[in-house]
Length: 529
Image (cartoon, rainbow, N blue to C red):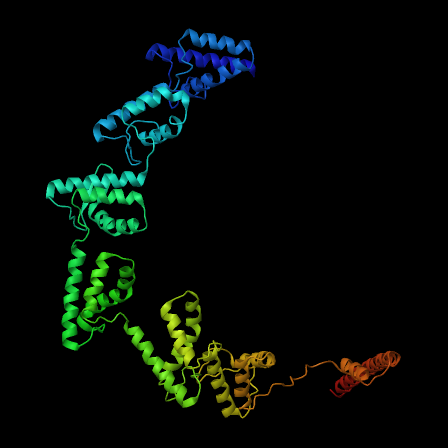
């Protein structure tokens, strides 16, 4: 094995000598893919391994094999300390060309390198981590400082400065900083939407300054120096003004701002809905654009409550009327025969308030909190969360009682005329099991349910049909229930066994006599023939 190692090293050494004769040095690139004949590894990897391994072996002890190898490598001018310097020099020359072309050393990740090897962006990132912290790279650091290398690179600050320079170019060409909202600019590193960037600065910088961020104070000063306008009329603002004028005209004609969804194909209606849902929150955040819009809408008595709010108020008034008439807010779910429910709409609304409002109140929504307070003021009951479906099943049981005269519903019963959301037979069984326990716990909802079931003669205890059992088991159970002792039971069992044996013999005798009779009949029939 050692012989083959020595032989392979000799072959690699001869390859290196040929490379030196051809190129004038021994700085073979690691990715140099030309392999020596009959050897699996490349020359570049072998050179890197010698530069690392031989020095370690010599420092750890006087190994004659590695001392001899170092002498032979020294004879052909092997560079121990600068094996990888040539690659650094190549990338440094690339960076100098980049700096001359773009004016900085901030190489983006999208920069396209045509040469093989690691990209220039990756090399620049490595210099920031290795050269900046390593004292052995002092010479490299001085050379990078000479071309204005950025040791601390912040992508967002660099991006902001890049967009600011694009804004300067726009002002030189157009004489102002009012960039259209959709204004993409093609650069070497891609497309940048300068209009959107300006819109974001108008929205973001005042908020950051209010929170006390000093970095954005400096950015605002730089924008002020070039005459940046913080309040401008953009394309979106122009469309907003058009819709506002349409709303003013509608308000003059109809006396209010409640635009229906069918008006002018719903365009103005959708715009009004956006103002009702988004404008107030943005105006409260201090955005000058939305503060101005709110003032203009207030001037025409704009109602920020949507049509849904009005519908909720209408249903609340109907519930109050129901409460005044019946003394409670327990509206039957989808009770079409009820005049107050009007086709079940009020019952559905009550069910939705009962199921949705408690969860939304936990989130702190002020509108929902106010609604809950209004419902509490009229004695609204929140606990009966499943009353809707329960009322439907109760109505199904009432129909069964009217038709059959009792409420003992078979488990497999199906009401084909008016289908129910669940199996009525199974529902009846579940009521017998759950309602009494809940009533015993003092649950008011189940107490009301029990009264409703009692009104139609609901039987809480029923006797199921006995299962079919064998005669022997019945006899043994009968003796047990009569209080007969175990000895008597054993005697009874013994008597039963004797009875079974006698019955068996009797049956065999009857079958044999039948066989003889059948034989006799056959013989007599044959003789007659």
